Amino acid sequence: MRMMTNKRIETMKKSLLWMLAVILTSSLLLTACYNDDIPVIDSAPTAVCTNGVFIGKQEGHVMAYKGIPYAVPPVGALRWKAPVAMADGDKVIDATEFGLSCR
Image 1 (cartoon, rainbow, N blue to C red):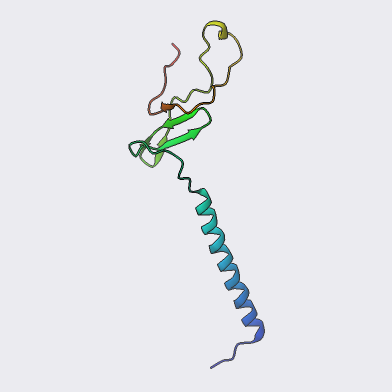
Image 2: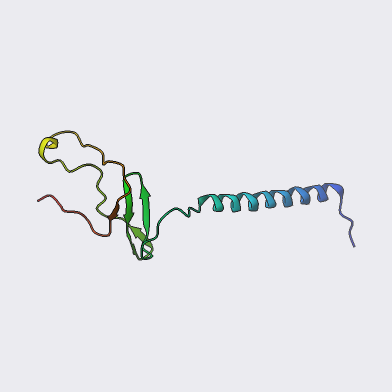
């Protein structure tokens, strides 16, 4: 049986320490990414944003969120003005279909 040299033993120790560090870091990152505060409504995918909770739908391997408004509709006094951001809130918005199109 061959004897291991001190250099080889030190190299193995360093490799084991690196693997342990990678495993611990990965588990910490995965734990940090888990968010228990996101509501799940009828098992539909949801996205929580500052202006509401958006309910999407699974389409194959993709979670789709359609028709999300980026600004207040430009009607009345807002007509021909710069877009106005949506107000913050916690309303639930159905984002399973595209919104109305301009015709």
